[in-house]
Amino acid sequence: MELAYIPSPSSGVLYLGPVPLRGYAFCIIIGVFVAVWLGNKRWIARGGRAGTVADIAVWAVPFGLIGGRLYHVVTDYQLYFSEGRDWVDAFKIWEGGLGIWGAIALGALGAWIGCRRRGIPLPAYADAIAPGIALAQAIGRWGNWFNQELYGRATDVPWAVEITSSSDGRVPGTYHPTFLYESLWCVGVALLVIWADRRFKLGHGRAFALYVAAYCAGRFWIEYMRVDEAHHVLGLRLNNWTSILVFLLAVLYIVLSARKRPGREDVVEPGASDGDGPADGEKKAGDEKAEETADEAAEDETSSTKEQADASADDSDTSTDSDTSTDSDASTDSDASTDSEESRDGAGSAKKG
Image (cartoon, rainbow, N blue to C red; front, top):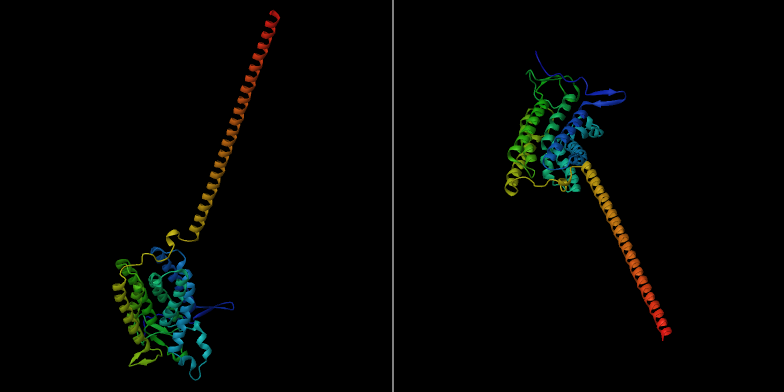
């Protein structure tokens, strides 16, 4: 008899009138917001602009959702295309079924498009959002709890999850909550990446590669515990082999990248040092307008001063002309007076003679 266990929700969806509110979708949405929030803080700390992470996420998130769904449908095609199945169910993403490998691969393509449009190096962006992605996965895994899926072998441990549904081959009972194990592991991965990034100044995509390697290490043993239907290769589930391959590639990237490009990027976003966002742009525009107004005022003052100087010069010329005219008139009057006196003296002499 089980003395303790984690109960499962009786339903993974609530209805707000005719609108369905699905727990799985809420977990995905909350995870995306957390990833963008943390990624934005880390991006600003690296020297980038506020809001850039969200702008690029507009490309990365839809691509990631499509990639995650494609990976799930391709690797578990029998759930949708075998006899008695409805292929339309492949589009019902809210019912669960996202493969992290496809989500990361196609999400990286979307992020590359967004980074290229802004002239940002993809590895720097990946480093900034790496721990946020891990936290998003930790939150998103609780969507599997709402759907009563992704559990492990039967157990009676106190933290076992109770499965009450009997649809799609489920057998009611208590099982290892592998969704919980992966959620806790992802939180640990996020903390590891944050610590290592601060301690070793990881750059050029190495923080992201550390996240991938650490996640794969945990996914391997957690995947080994799961009992849901999956393809097997040489006795191991397909996702076990994927974890091994991706882990080796991530470690190889860390080693080669550290040798080829040690340290961090000096500039992660061109032009970010000139301002941190639209507010700074508006402030800069205001400053430029103030400078233009000051220049115009200076020009008006200079023009006014020049006009006053010209007017003063004209007054001086007028005064000079007036003085010259007065002197000329005085000289003329003096000469005329002298001539008159000489004329009278001559007349007097003539009378005497």
